[in-house]
Image (cartoon, rainbow, N blue to C red; front, side, top):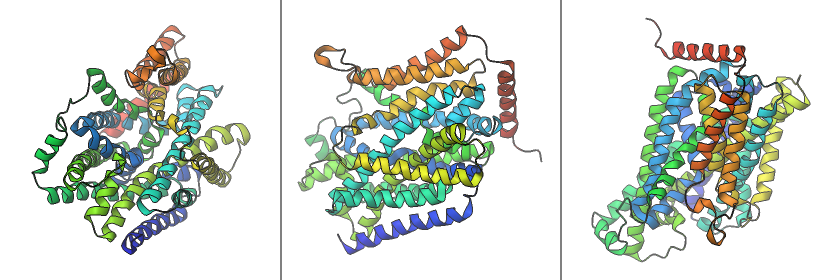
Length: 501
């Protein structure tokens, strides 16, 4: 490994650990501070934290790889994500910020569901928590695999060493610094990712010149055709990725943590600007990278490593190290968020409810740290074999979360007639539909339905329909639940208005 690369990566790791140490001393005395940062995130930190924890290594590996192979037709997923993220800021963010605070100061999504519907049986809370812990443990494992493979492919080091190094740094700053450390490191990591996704395609383009368009079009007909190789259902499936945003706990928890409703417009503007530029940069990296490989004849076995190839070929080792740190940032920012959300569910939705209702704040913070470590260790064990088939399930977790939680989150924030049973039906039907779509061999030759249309489409629609029908068919929610909903909505409108001068 080049000395410059080592220096850049070492500086990155030290910076992340330093932020974790600062956050440890700042706001981890209470469980609200440890798991939600005391609801005091500024708009820029909340916005970039949401973006960085959302995109993961997919932004620098998966999307450039798809654009490398398919050209601009890979952009439909990015378009769907932009639309979904924007609607998430408009529909979910302001309402969730107010309702989670006023409805019993809920600090997790399952906690909010229980308090929103006054579910004293805890059934809704426990099912939502199980979904979160299981899927996020698998998600976390996938991120750690990505870290191990990065060290293996880019640096020629041992896979296990890369796995433990990536996991070790993330676990240390998450375990000690909690939500504040995760959010601040996400902010820094988001800035690094942003610079990398602007710098790399611009430098690659300057090396190639405009002539690359003709060369690429000749070598790959359809590279600049948005509909190349796509059907109508294919476009719908790509756009439907945006539906997943409404149900991703590690993203929408940032809406709960921002300082106030009045900060959300600024958070939205910053977050959407970051996202649009980053996605354009990722697609441009893949397209320009394809032209670079064609012109230079550079061998590339895995299209998803085009970012790494360009970083190593075009830059001084010190800058290459920075660009590879951006890739690590994308991976680690998502791992840390998933660890903390899993820990919050285990602490708040299991330990506090079933094991120790009178636990002190100090005890809860300690349990939260133990849960971070426990989830991380399980994820590391799952990731130790990079070919473990369990990672196939992780590829569908976005659809699972989106279909199970998305309709229920939207309806619980916007429709006072939604009942506890309706919410429970929505979660179960949404999740079951996604699983059926992925695994049931009901088509010819044993093919599954996900080969026809992305599973989040039927999962989201049927989950939402189930929540509505069960709510309408059953008894109305208790008058107190409706009254609380109306009071919270009135408070949201009051908080949104500018203060009197």
